[in-house]
Image (cartoon, rainbow, N blue to C red; front, side, top):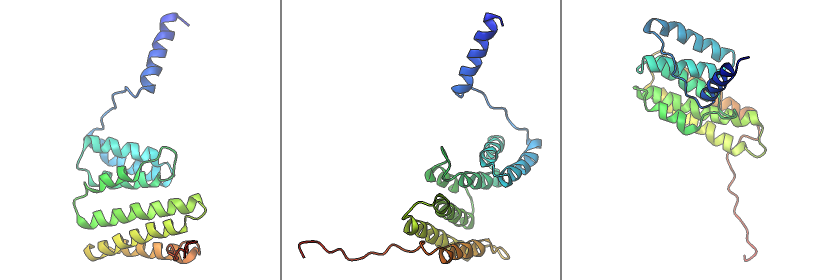
Length: 185
C-alpha cells in the first residue's frame, strides 16, 4: 500500500470518529418510504436505526408529525440501554406536539416505559419507583382520555396495561411511609 493511501485512510477514520461527516438529505419523495422503514426497524427491535431515520425525515421535513411521534417512540424504546436517551431529551420533543391529547398521551408513554425499563432491569427494591412511574403514566392517560378523539381508545388501553402490570407484580407497590422511631424517644 502506498504511503499516501495510508495517510488518507487515517484522515478519513479520524473524520468518522470525530463525527465530521455532512449527513445526506432525504428527498421529499423518499419520506414516506423512510417512515415505513422506521416501523420495520422498531419491530425488529433496532430502535437506534429507527431513531436515525426519524432524524433524517425531520431534517427534510421539520413539521412531520408522524416522524416526531416515531422519534419519541424510538427513543423510549432505548430507555435503559447504554448511551440511551435521557428523560429530558425525550420530553423536549413532547413540546413540539401540537395537540394537548398527544402531549398527554406520549408523556404517559414516556412514564410507562421508564417504569417497564426498571422492571426489565430487575433492580432490587425498585418496586416503589416502578409504581410511581406507572401511576404517573396512568394520570397522563386519564388526562388524555378526557381529550381523546371519538373512537380513539389508545389511552384506555395503555392505562389498563399499567394497572395490570401493578396487579401482576407483588413488589410493585407504593412506598410505605412508616413512622421512624429514634433512640431518643
